[in-house]
Length: 276
Length: 81
Image (tube, rainbow over all chains, first blue to last red):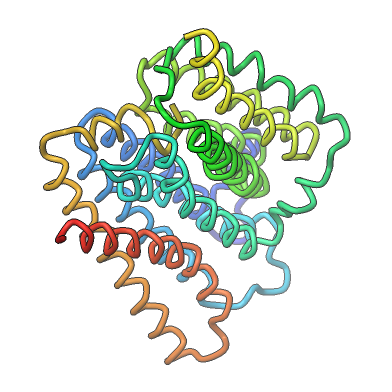
């Protein structure tokens, strides 16, 4: 396209918050690929899905290395720099699935499996946050104004979650339950929130505007395709929309992290023991 | 009931073909780790200090994959006893 020609494609994409750059199209492609790989893990065969995830992860890292082969030039917009960061943030989702299918072992208890599978995810998310300073996880975790009600929303949501999934009461000692619950809070609830609301949502919004938020919510729903009953996946998607909105409106992660922790621990540990 | 441990992972662990599929998945994760480690070393060898940012980005995947690799090795070693 010559410089004199009007960039009509920009006008078409602008209302959706997207720029018609190759990176935007690539991000859509990668996101679609991740959703397909998740569907493959949940409905076809886990090993096929993991191969797809590994290929996507490798492609995302190579793409990022390719885009950073030249230094950031003067005049490059913040959004185009943010588009590069999306590639790193998206890489966390394939890592989550690879970890979830390699870390839990048959002899591990269910509660310890959450810690084992979530530890690499939390480590990767913290490293990504360090590599992408714009995610500002620390600042957003320390912003506690107006977070009490958001945090408390985890209690009724946990009851809903229990009513839908009806998990069996845990057959474990008190010390195991306490340790497992701590693992559940740190390596499942916090790791998921820091990944999806902290790093991914932030990177996608900075690059693509409101459409980016839809993308992060869609990916959050996609990683829940493997839960049963499938009604719980729909519930998780709705909770993802709610938490995304909370995090975006308040620019804080504290409320959603606590809410997710209360939801998970009450649905898996507390309600099955009290009601079940 | 979470994105990492759910019905799919549980069914996978309980399945009769767990050993076969787990081996394949472990090989994929380990191969990916080896490729990324080689890439990281090549980057620092040929481009020197200019690649600090890129190596940091590769580290986002390498460090968790190293953790996963350590667990795979531990599990395989203990299963030999």
